[in-house]
Structure formats: C-alpha cells, structure tokens
Image (tube, rainbow, N blue to C red; front, side):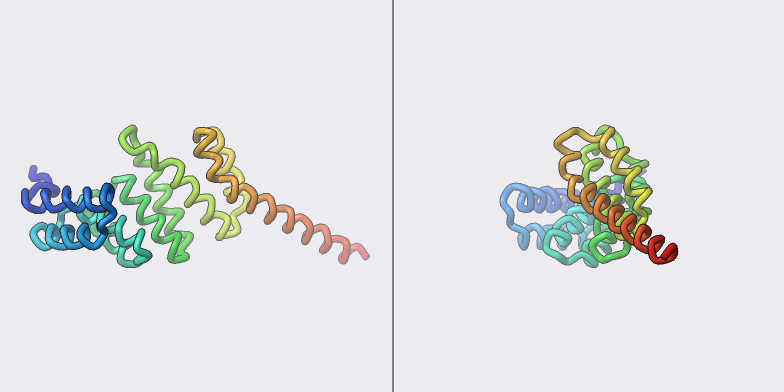
Length: 184
C-alpha cells in the first residue's frame, strides 16, 4: 500500500518547509507558495491539504479552507482533525446542522494522538446547538463537557453556558407572560 503523503519526496519537503514557515516564522505567503507547489506535484498530499485549510481559515478564507479540508477528508475520512476543521468552517459560514454533524464525527474519531481537539469541538458543538435553539441538548452537552474537560478547558465554555442560561431565562419569562395573558 502506498502512503498518499509520501508519493513525492519533494512534496514532503515542501510541506515541512511550509509547516515551519507557518508555525515558527509566521510567513504565511511563503507557506502557501510551498503548499501550492507541493500540491501541484502531489495533488493528494493530505498533510498539505490540511495545512492549507488551516492557513486559509486563519486568513479568513473560510470557504476555501473548507474545500481543502473536504479534499483531505476524501483521503482520510476518519481523521478527527480534518473533521473538526470542516465543523469549524461550517460553523463560521452559518451552517449549524453540518457543523454539528461533523463535530459528532470528529468526536467519534478522537484518539490519544489528538485528544487536544476535545475543547474546541465542545465549543463548536455547543455554539451551534444554541444557534439551532436546541437549548436542552446544549445544556446536556455543557454538563458532559464539564465532566470531560479540564477546569482550564471548561473555562473557555463559560460564554456558551452564560448564553444558554440567558436564553432559557428569556424563554421562561416569555412562557410566564403568555400564561398570564391567557389566564387574565
């Protein structure tokens, strides 16, 4: 079986240079040039597709990032990082149903090599449940996150927990006022 990531050694070298330029030197343009060359040489170089998705997302080019992640997903359909990237993109382009779907797929594919994804996946899923007005599910998922995450990671979910509490309080106030109107 041929590893799709190392079909062309030049692509691998270019990917590693792009990775260094992105992570260590903050040279995004140079990283993109390296990745474009790597992908011309090896269009199915999954690591280059993922990194290009990461860079494009950071640059605010969410739809372009999504396309790179979707291409990478075709090569590695059970990769939690790719699935999380797709979920995040769908969240940013206001497609909460798909964001939730890809979060769930990412959750089911997390392993010891990528468990750092838990925190961001909880955040994406809860935000999108709130956007879908699925307050009960969001509340249950916040409780699940509270048990699963470290205190530090759970702290990042406080805005979602606060939003849920406000929305539930407003919902209860509306119901209460409606009942008062009906009974009067």
